[in-house]
Image (cartoon, rainbow, N blue to C red; front, side):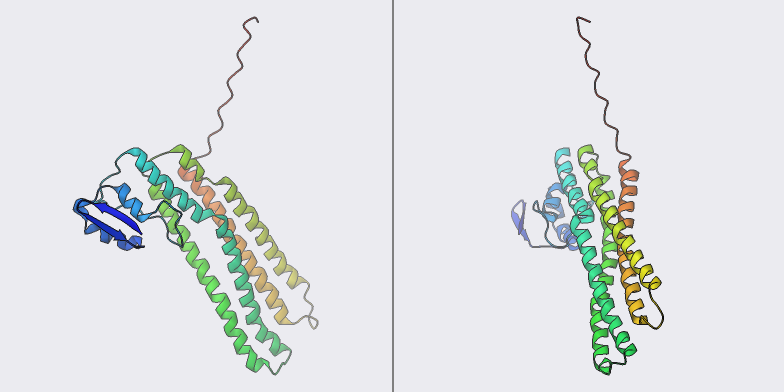
Amino acid sequence: MALFDMPHRTVAIRSVPFASLSRFLALFHPVLPSRSAWFAVALPKDSMPGPTLPPPLPPAYVSGWPDRSALLADRGRALEELRRRSLGVHRVLLLWLLAVSAIIGWALLVLPLQQLEQRDPTGFILGPLFAVLGLASLAPSVVAVVLAVRRDRHISQLLDAWLRLDSHPPTDDRLRSSGLSLFWLLSSLVVCAFGLWTSFAGVAEARPGRDAYSDVVLVMGIGFILWLTGLIGVAKAVRHYRWAVRVLGPRAAPAPAAPAAEDQGG
């Protein structure tokens, strides 16, 4: 619970969504102290649990920050949280976990086809069950990836909005996240290459009459999922690099060392 102190009244706010928070604060417009107080309510100092993102810029009717240091403090906290939510290692692990779930779903969807090729009589009973389980594992993974892409777009818009408030080179330079961006790129390239190799190897090694068509479909589907997962990661790393160059500019070269002072006796 966060307490928002105002003259002659104290309002207790419990997990108010950011979209409705502005409408809630509009009721107290005449006594709103500053944007810094609005930000303190919308974004607690502790790390924010759950999927909640830092808020957009405060509404126009909220007065400005008391001083530049308060503005930079709020701006730095918002930018750091957005950077973590965009490029954190947990996002890579979540993407891979969704890929594993999609692979399991695809394997379950192919099982009825394998049973038909083997003329297994239990396929008429277990086939629909495997198909439902496969869709239950594959469909949520696809939906989660689509929502994650839309969330990244929203994060990028918030980053641009908070960056335009002011300029603070030490804070802004941390947004480049060269190490995380490189990790996204290299790991995704490995996954993408492994997916391509799996697809082409499965097709090239298949022999008519010896390998079932369902096995080829299974291997090609797994390879495609891995390739698409890697491609999403590569696109994210490249997009972040282009954003950093466009918004933050190229990294400044280190200043040359001062020349050593000449000996007085020389």
